[in-house]
Length: 425
Image (cartoon, rainbow, N blue to C red; front, side, top):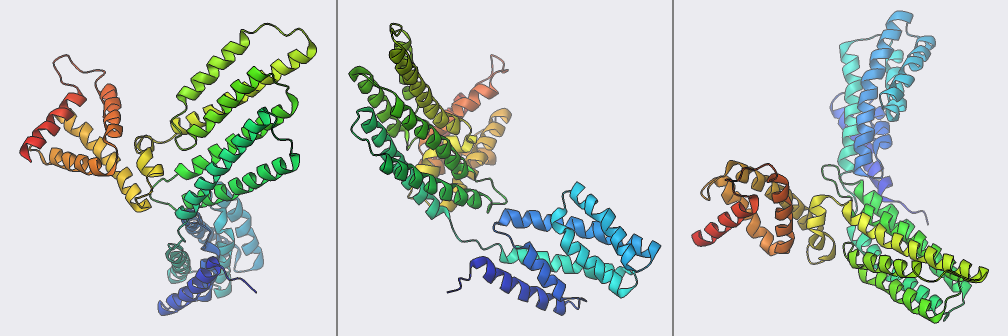
């Protein structure tokens, strides 16, 4: 059976609407609007906006150059070729290459008419506006992907636990099945590739806000997957004694405790450093085999440290509002994505208002302070309070570095207004 996808349906609807709208507006060459719509509908909203922006720039550029060439050299094929010779390099230079084909079609309308007028130029611009406008409107609908992405996240973490369990068994020499290992790593890689594609596509569907958490998360897991594969390869070569087996197995099992919390790696990294230091203080190897094995053990520890460091780097690179609201944004499944976005906006608003109120030393009765208290009361329901208190502490250190001794700090100011608000209400 022939499968008709959503993009095909949107293209068919958009092309039809574009023609009808162009005809209603009385535009010449109305069918060109449908072609422009067809070419402007993209896989994501952000790509559509980018393509539309390029097409609009290219339209102005091509009509300007084409008009000049036709007026100077006449309405003939040579003038058209010269206009393309000038237009195409300039379109590339001004990042409007997506509009080259559609704009060239519009210029042929001028060639076909054999004259230049304000009404004709306006007609061509209107065709582009109708075509791209309809494309943007029909592309506002995108299927929701967040549920699938969170399912991907759960499956990835589950499969990572399976891989870690396999590595632990490998350390203890409880497994020697290369076929199953290849199948395991291959299936996880396929899962990661699909999840990364969906996360990047979902990120591209947000135009007015930046939603990059899941794209960064999938990139982190991809990097960790490569490390896990290298750890498995090291275990194929090394020969461990019973003490080394116990130490490496216990350390490797710790990784599963950090899977659900990207910020819970500090203790594991410290433990990894401690074990590396202990191995460095061991007696020097006496034989070539001992030297090779000790080198491989160090390599395993270094790779494992890198595995944990990827987690830490991921958390450190999150935007401030994502760090503070990690529980609400990622782990807390009881709230919808729209509610999570609202929490992010409230967090930004809260920090901005708190800074303003503190710098102005506004009293409890000021509307800005009342608004601040309202946002705070909403936070006490939606997120863990201690997360916001930690953020306030960070802000306090940043704002109070240059304060005079007779000034109160931000934390004291905040505690004061909250205390006063409790008395009022």
